Amino acid sequence: MSRAPWIRARGEAPIPTQLIDNRKPVDKAVLVGAPQKDVPIALADEHLAELARLTDTAGGQIVGTVRQRLDHPQPRYYVGEGKAEEIRDVVAATGADLVVFDEDLSPAQGKNLEDLVGVRVLDRSELILDIFATRARSREARMQVELAQLEYMLPRLKRMWTHLSRIRGGIGLRGPGETQLETDRRMIGERIADLKEKLQAVTRAREVQRRGRAGQFRASLVGYTNAGKSSLLRALSGDAEIFVEDRLFATLDSATRSVDLGDGYAALITDTVGFIRKLPHHLVASFRSTLEEAREAELLLHVVDASFPNWQEQFEVVEDVLTQLKLDDRPQVLVFNKVDRLTHAEEEALRDRVRAFEPRPAVFVSALDPASLVALRETLKARIRRGLPRVHIQLPSGDGELLAWIYREGEVLEREDKGAVIDVTARIPDRLLASLRQRQGIRVVDVA
Image (cartoon, rainbow, N blue to C red; front, side, top):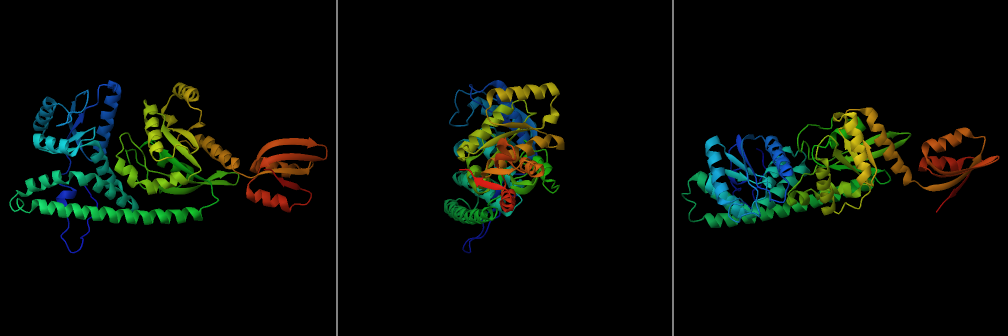
């Protein structure tokens, strides 16, 4: 699988390729679920099923599964010693060349497990980082993923050098091995600093772009991976070039499109990277510049997969990540997508359930049904109108065309008919407001 590129530093040899990808191509994988006993069994099974999807996305073939419920993680192998030996036996019986844990392992636990089972051991974070490395397309996304990988790798470098010495036989590495290890640590540190500096430059460039879009209403799509954010942006904008695939983390690159909402209104809508439970904190930190688009948005469209049985847990995962990013104070609209996969009765039950527990506005749509997107467009138009200047307008009662225009283009808050004149208090877009001020016989007064 592809890995972050390495650049020679100060005339030194580059870090050996094995340090970046020192395992064989993933063919067969054994999954290990080791939740604590306070996690419900059904939820633990669901987490393991998601790990299977992640492994499939990474290109792995699942040949075995091992489970153990723990009071607390064990310091040596994370699981108990007997269960670790069972993992070793399953690896031997299936010919697996990879073990994937659903929990995060410490560097020592990972090394101990690899010494015992004799194959590469990945935890959930490392698997997600691997997927991100293969899915990143833009230069910015590749830098963000490389930074996250290096920060994850740094405390585990000694374990990776163990793999390297095993591959190369160890002869010639026994003396200067530690010296080379320190050299590699320094090179990784320098590369991390270089990437952070470059990403800061990207952040500054994004700020310039955002200033250039000042005055335009901006919304960001956020949500769990594979909830259908990219599909929604494609359907709303009509841009068939937006990449869509029914897999976890199909795309990591943010995309912004202008969306025509009708009646002269438009919004800039940005698709952001999807979230997932137990998202590696290195990734959250590395993707901050991309997620700045969500920070600058006037509205977050929280997309939820309505067809997923346990959608509420995914919803809470996204809410937790938004809190970590200090985005939980942003206005939100919940967008329940994929309602085409529900029966009429299931959709009605979902609507009742959402109304019962969630005070925020919610719309129910399908990216595959253009008619269902009307409600979302109307919701966005209402949000835009809410931010428009509030004015008091006095116009002749016989000017029905102008009155209809005000109703169509703005948001009428109050109306009073006074014989020959009509008093209207409304929120009006700037282009209409400028036209009204130029008309004879029309009185316009700003309302504080």
